[in-house]
Amino acid sequence: MNKGSVFARHDNIEHMACLFRSHSFLIRAGFAALLVLFAILSTGSMAAAAPKSELWPRWEAHDPASRVVVDHAAWSRLLGLYARPNPYGVTRFDYAGLQQTERAALDTYLEALSATPVSRLNRAAQFAYWLNFYNALTVQVIVDHYPVDSIRDINISPGLFAFGPWDRKLVTVEGEALSLNDIEHRILRPIWRDPRIHYGVNCASIGCPNLLTTAYTATNADRLLTENAITFVNHPRGASLQDGRLTVSRIYDWFQADFGDSEAGVLDHLRKFATPEFRAALGSVEGIEDYEYDWSLNATDGPS
Image (cartoon, rainbow, N blue to C red; front, top):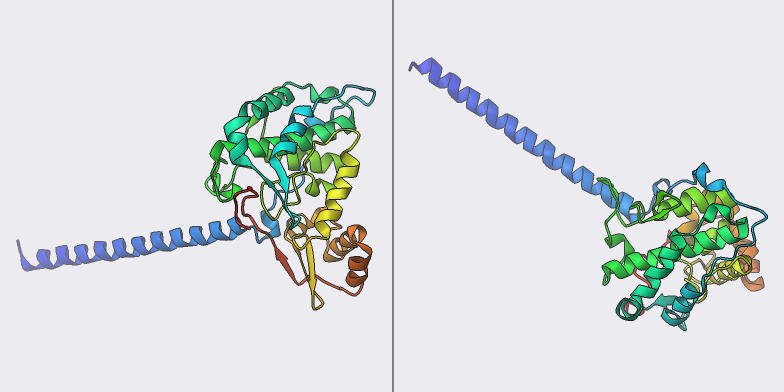
């Protein structure tokens, strides 16, 4: 072997080593970028990360003349037993207690909802049906994976950048597989176009409006949603005014489109449900300083 071939081989080895180091750097940099992107998305700090309201036309079908009453007594009983308001205005749920004693009752209730021909109900009955379905299904997901610190830790949604349980197809209704996101963002929000829906669906978090201690029905849903809106808006989780600086729930950021599609619209919404004293204080507020949200699980044995 001549000296020239030795030098050539050495140069080739050095070139390959440089390429390997460059590729390794790019891989590490790319992986780091992916981690940063995932962290940004998972914090929920960007309104763009929230699902949009996009109608699934298949669920518009209803029967205005229907007098069918869906029985939500089983869910109401479970809520009465395991949803527990505390002195700080936050309702917590005893997931561990339900898991040990009445898990079968929850499963049976959800099976009954899945078997209900919802397209044959009137609009009021459908509204209560979907609100209860969402909340009971969320409780079932938590119980299935309990104990967890946050619902976001239940990473069962399909997709590389998906997190949490919201995009997993969990139930079948009238032959259609549905996820929690389907119920909230493709059925409830686009069909009813009512911002109070955000006070009705509960994502098992401290930062969320309270899970009520009774089920929604066709006759009480309107009243209960208004009551829960008032409770949330006037609680620090919903809105807090300190030294003229307004901090509100990130719900009003994620779903600003449902609250007038502007900060001014959010402020008008808050004033609508604020107590007289808080409404007067909000009168001089021109903008929102900050948004907050606590993803800690709303369990009875969770953090205070």
